[in-house]
Amino acid sequence: MAVKHFHSRRSHRGVAVLSGLVLLTVVVVLVLLNFRGPGAWAAVIAGAVVIGLVVAYFRKRRQLIAYELHGDGLVLRRGGEEARYALQDVLDANLIDMPTARNYIRHGAGSGQGGADGVGQVLTTFCAVPLRGIWAMRTGLSNMGMSHFRHSLVLLRTRDGGALVLSPRYSEPMVSAIAKALARLREGMSGTVS
Image (tube, rainbow, N blue to C red; front, side, top):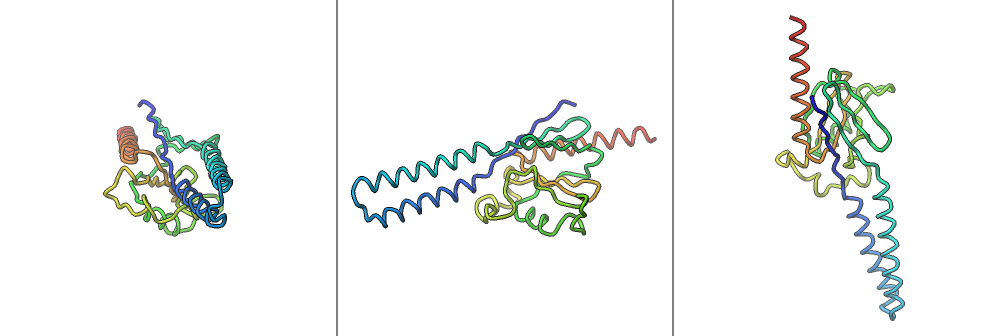
C-alpha cells in the first residue's frame, strides 16, 4: 500500500478575535484622541501595523500538523513531535462534529477519565482546531452539524480505550482510507488464522 498523506486544516478563530481587538483598539484610540490631526491617524495606523505584525509572526511560528497512513500504521506529526500507531492498535475511525468532540473530550474516552499512563485519555495533540480554552468559541465550525462532512473532525479510537481527535483538511477521505486499511488488515488476519 502506498503512503497516503493528509494535512491538517487551520483554525482562523484566533485571527478573527485579534482582528476584532485591533478594530476595537483603533476606534477607542480615535475616540480618545478625538480626531486631533494627522498625528492621531499616524499613531493609530502604526499601532494596527504592529499588532498585525505580531499576529503574523505567531501564525508563522505555529507548528504544522500532518498525518500519514502507511500499510502497517498511522504516523502523526506536529512540528518535531511524532507519534506512531500500528493499525492493529486502532479500533476504528469516525467522523465527528465539533460539539460532539468537545463533549467527548470533556467526559473522557469510554467510561473512564484515563490513567496517568495515558490509557483511556482523549488526545488533542494532533488537532489544529481548538477544542478547549478561549479560542474554542461557539462560532463558525462549531455550529455546523454532521451534514458538513468536509468540516468535521476525525475521532480515532484505540484498543487501549483511548482516543485521538484529528483535524485533517478533508476528513471523509481520511476516515475512508483508515477504514479500508483496517479491513485489509482484518482480512489478512482472518486469512492466516483459518
